[in-house]
Image (cartoon, rainbow, N blue to C red; front, side):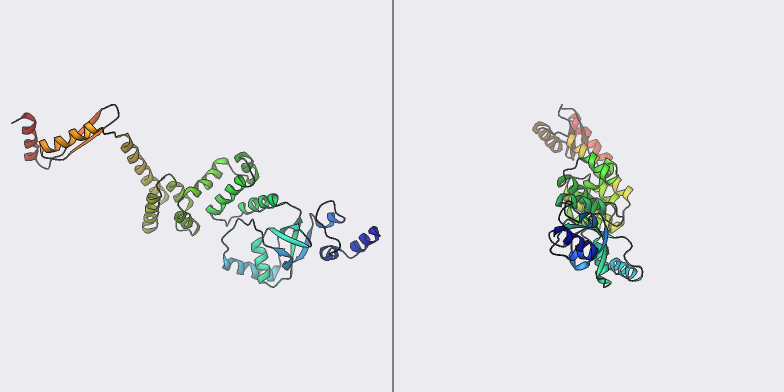
Length: 296
């Protein structure tokens, strides 16, 4: 009886397999699984749920409308990828723009490549495929790389192999996630480029990052210009950190200001070596300082 029922299902074709509640395929070992899994079939769009692991967070509505118009004229050229879940239901792995545009075009079915995948594999497939697309912004790509490492537990070498990118390239995208969220949004909205972001990430102070970001947007600074600004800031900070003033040196500088009657600046290192600068505004003031030093 089991065999006759199987033959009956086969005789009714794939549509019968997709809609027969008495013959649910949930694993590769189930009868007729080979006819569905790994095949491209037309699935009802209402049977396909959205991918909870979708790495893309921005969808350009205008581009989806344009894709919808194309689908009305030419149909769906590239099938979406779905995974079989409980019952006769399917979950989107990749192709959300195509699915949205197909619904907008009024299609009842969509060509779908059917897979069996667990949650982890589904996430990896969705992330890797989306990373290959040209229209993801740098922050979305960085987030996808981060999720592949954190949630799929890939090493950087494995990730490099999966996405076909150098480790240094992957690291550059992931470093953008260290930027202040305001600046990350600026990159996503194309107020600044990834190159600007790579320069800004070298500044650890969040407030200073944002100040420079605002200057970039306001003045239209080039990436090279921002890199130069950041280098100067870091050099200044390095010099400042090298300057060590002991309580004695501070006190000596204050006493010199009083004795000479002018401003005095001191810089020194931890070994006690340093530079003393005495300011003057005129030759007369310099002569006055010399007289003080000589005791006249």
